[in-house]
Image (cartoon, rainbow over all chains, first blue to last red; front, top):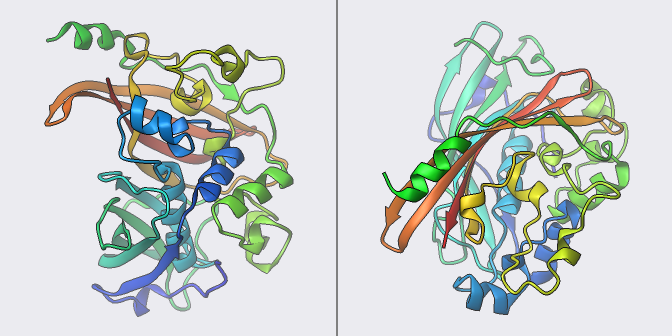
Length: 160
Length: 176
């Protein structure tokens, strides 16, 4: 739950891990609840015979659309109420099957100071219980300076 | 170039009409969504200190991307396909983001390949959201598991005042 404080740009170190997020085990009930919330009735998330016999998949899949929510939560939680999770990019390289627990992780790879606030580059991913990576990606989070200005809202993409 | 690639070319660059979501950002829909993603931040529920700068209660970041649903009176693809053994449950609003279905890929399975998301502003409770999309690229590719088609769709989500909330670039994997 995003109740943490926003880190200041100056306090973030390159190479630092950002607090991970664990979700699961994700059961068919979780997947059905998500399907209902977004009104997506793709059978590969709840109809096992169709998934395995018709679509030739190994089992019911955790929705990519659900995994991307977890990525955004990881970033927004870390950015806190005064930061801004501006960009996220990820590929669904491997499937996550129902009943898996997934852990979203992130690591600071670079930081860039602009005139009014700073940008933090992050590499991220989602691993399952076995440590297998399924969703490698990157993100950019904007953070304020100590004693600096409040970030613009709506967020205005910087030129640096 | 294969016959399939040739038939897909006409879709590249195709742009949707602006589509307005059939419902505004509803508090109950936000609650169900936040609970489904297990992200029950108070900023999504009621006015609080942490959403003051957003103008009050907001929806989770990607909520607007899931607001384009079947309106009252529109054809019901679930019932229309009740006896179709090949119907995979995907409804147009999920798969096409307001764009016409790609006819040569009818019957192809769909998997989510990945996304690039730019996030500018939360959707506030009560706001109306509109969407425009375009097919940015469609390419056929050989893999060890057979041929696949990568469909790249770019979309923009705005409120009724035209303020940009989210820009996405999604890749869908389609295969026989």
